[in-house]
Amino acid sequence: MSTSKPLLKQGPLVQAKYSENNGITLAWNMTEDIEAEAIYHSILPEFDELSSTLLEVRIDPIGSAFTRTLSPGRNFYHVKFKDGSVSTINDRMIYTDGVINFRDMGGYLTEDGRTTRWGMLLRSADLHELSEQDLLTADALGIDWICDLRSEFEVASRPSPAIGKAINTNIPFMAEANPEEMQKIGHDLHAGYKAMILNTDKCALILHELLKEDRDTSLFHCAAGKDRTGVVCALILLTLGVPRDVVIEDYELTNLAVDGLMQRFLSGSNKDYKAYMDQMPDIQGAIPEMMKAAFIQAALEAIDENYGSFELYLTEGLGINEEQRTALQNKYLI
Image (tube, rainbow, N blue to C red; front, side):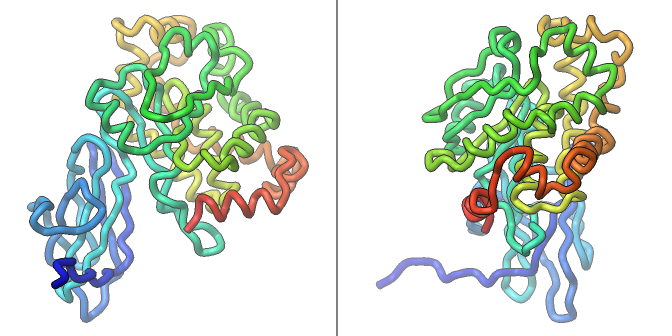
């Protein structure tokens, strides 16, 4: 006699938007014969009412806004509709004690109608302060490859711990992130972003690494997970066919980590980041302004100005042919 549970009926598409103070808004298409009756939180992707927590939230006809549940690691929300169907939403943010700006780039719709796979492309700030619980959380993510975009100076100052089976590769994405160089970039972030996206050798290397068979789940990070990581992740999403406006939205999610970024950069107990800030008096107190869309747009403009289109940038600038781009899309899209 089979004891397997019956398959749940799939509910309508539900989209998640994030806001300040850990806010999340779930929105769905309303039809006459369907109505949401409950929202559950779970640490499991499969909905099981007994192992999920019923949230006491207001549900409007087309959505619900509430404060995210901050359970370590991955979180899921299950919207149960009155017709018996259930829609499951991955929380893009991955909660840890010691790492800020940790998130998943899955769930983005591409121009050809496919979607970026969940759990394969991750991004974060540096990993130096991962707690013991965080290490268990990170290990459970099944990370195969960690791409550390920091300079040798930064890596030596704040080394990353080993995480499970993950191979950790240092690919410095700027010539030398010492205080003097950081000062130059801080004074003209537009130029810095343009220089990073035109660093074609490093950009090509990263895409080739993603093509390797042992690169299933990859984590990209720099110091704060916003500038170098922002450019590299934009490159990857664009290569996969994610529209530019969505790529910019992903970049701007770093705004939600502003409080943590400010504390990390300005904390007197954090001598490494404080040293950077002491070298950049003109931008102290203005870090939230650094996550504006204008900076990632500057990188995109550099592509257009120098190559005419992203497609030509890939082929002529990075040497990525159509076969290789297709292989990346087949691997990271569903």
